[in-house]
Length: 425
Image 1: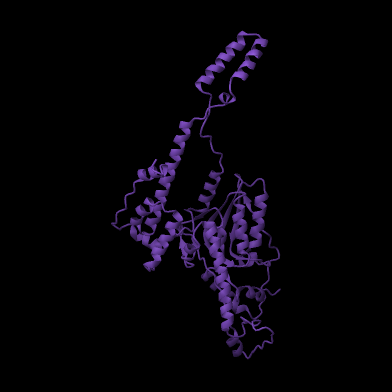
Image 2: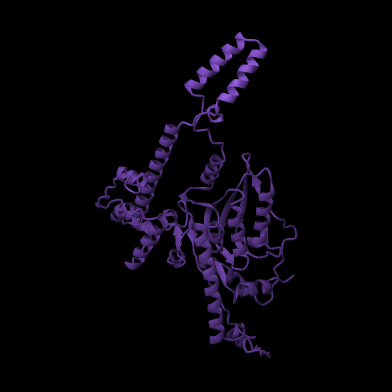
């Protein structure tokens, strides 16, 4: 079975969502073998099922280059299909023993065809069961589209996310064919039928058509990431298909937390643990006295008298008085504590983002105006692009440790007060 021509048709002249380095590896293997060398698939390849932890978390792997269909090449060439991942997701969603799903992603990306359908399925499934993703170690291009569709995304310090872009390659074999005395002549009807033929240079109309398709897929990609990560489309495109590693990925809004697969699994497991009741509602002092007096009366009277007393009480006492009273003071205190914790968490996140972007002086201004975190990320990315700094945020962060610049002081008490009294009440 000769599969290389089939694979070549899926690589050349089609939009791909794959990291450039991986594409070069594929081309270096594929191009020299286009003379017809056979590539036999493994006959024993089977669909890998997901694992389920004792706590009920299904771990679905997404390893290797991503394609629509693998045509039996999984084990031999490191391919995984969107169909396989989708089937495993469906099984985990319908499995009553599965309480949550963790996507284990390590992939440079792959084909554009099929990835958005899978991303839509993952995003919709978040309403059924919790779905998190862990990058271990790379989630680039199409793989990032998958990971970004989960509700929470972890990336390790050495892992990477991003490459939000689309690329297409045209192979012109005409000179190599001429060198060995070959010349292809195409007879066709329809002016565009022979577009992107590998036996002649790429024509201007064909180039324009391919660019239009690349741009269309790029817009789909940006919209998918925008939805999953709750970022403006403009902020997604502002990444310019760059690769973001470790803390840079978190600072750019492309990941939620620095952590390994083990960290993500532990946190997801903890989130599934039953939450203890925060309040215990008990009868009031008056109700306890009433109950005690009622018991004494019942002990001192006959059964007939007790029935008569009960009937009279049921007629005279409003139903509302029988219900346990809600501790308003406790509820108010709890609400204030939660609001304060939320305000402090917001301040800490804003301060961390500005520190990672080497712009600590902007933190106080953002906090004073309670600018949303997504908007802050966009503003910081735009500012970095405007200054045309060529180095990544990580390298700047490393140099920041010795910087004498002082952090802006933030009045967390004032922020807490303003959040609890938005109209000055």
